[in-house]
Length: 64
Image 1 (tube, one colour):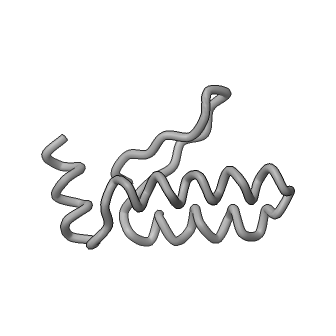
Image 2 (cartoon, helix red, strand yellow; image 1 turned 90 degrees about the vertical axis):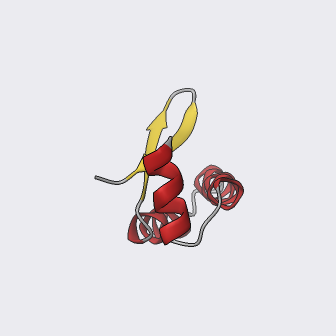
Image 3 (cartoon, rainbow, N blue to C red; image 1 turned 90 degrees about the horizontal axis):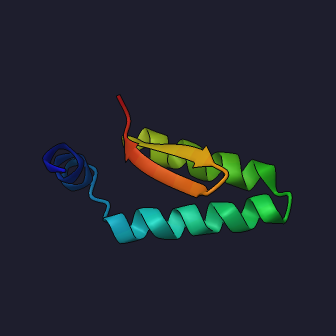
């Protein structure tokens, strides 16, 4: 959890902001707007956040 918090602080992003981006990406995917979904994933990756998709939804962790 400490590493996660450090990355969030370094990249000036909060867990709430990440969740909002995940929600926006899910909505884009549901609308078959894959360009927007990919752009959101790319934006988060550029800020050190990796998204993991599963049948139960999307989770995030720090990118390695």
